[in-house]
Amino acid sequence: LSSLGDVIHHLPAVTDLARHRPGARICWAVEEAYADLVRLHPAVAESIPVGLRSLRRYPLRIERWRRLAAAGRALRSRRWDYIVDTQGLLKSALVARTASGRRYGLDRASAREASAASLYDERIAVPRGLHAVERNRRLVAAVFGYAVEGPADYGLELPPYPPLWAPRRRFAVMLHAASRAEKQWPDDKWVELARRLSGHGYATIFPGGTEAERVAAARLALLVPGAIAAPPMDLWAAATLLAHAQFVVGVDTGLTHLAVALDKTTVGIYRATDPALTGLHGENGLSLGGHGREPTVDEVIAVLAP
Image 1: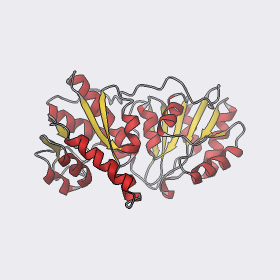
Image 2: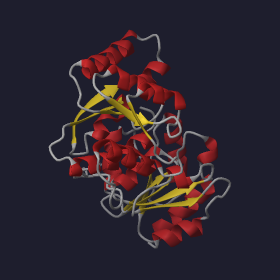
Image 3: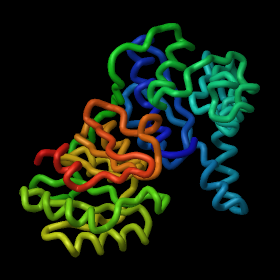
Image 4: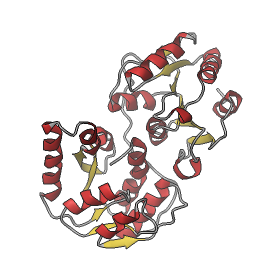
């Protein structure tokens, strides 16, 4: 019910549950911007869009309150066998309380917000030092009585075709935009990386979610032969683009995690956050840098070995 990264970090727990409890009907209450994404997981039978973020941005719009009321009705429309809150925030615990059934979540020492634990019927301890993906997997496994086994499997069905405007030759996606300035990699490094990849025969694509990010993408693309500034895309279109890239390089942002979930070779650029807890998690993802440590272009190229 927060960021795209949080949603992606829960996908492997859904894969585990579907494997250990075949035939279970899994419904996911999720921030409405990501409802289409969770439907890419074949085990998700239903998604309930919960528009908390849009309501916070537009608190006076009646339509937003109506949509939130519709989510509440969907949650109350039946009695659930299990209600599991893996996020451990007060807002996610309150959404869980809206539904009828026995509620499971993290205990006070494990939850991201300790107050959330008071709203569950069953509280489960999960070490805080684990990566978010593994915390989610352990919590769900404890609820349903099985052991976590093997590497994380995000379970997404890959979109079959890239966007029509995508290059017909090999391309790499450069996820340069971040919500916080301290997470961004300097423009000169993006340009150097893209030029070196161009020399190896790759087209490079710079997406942007907001108008300001697309202006920045256009500025970067102008400095690299054959580079493309992506047009506006919804989350589905972004997923189709990432799914058909040869590889992805991105800062600490949800789309970088999505690239890993889509089984793409992905390099994460970390400058202001600790990748041990929320970095790229999967066999095809590698996090470079960290808090106060900025990776070089040479380090990225060495990993990609184009």
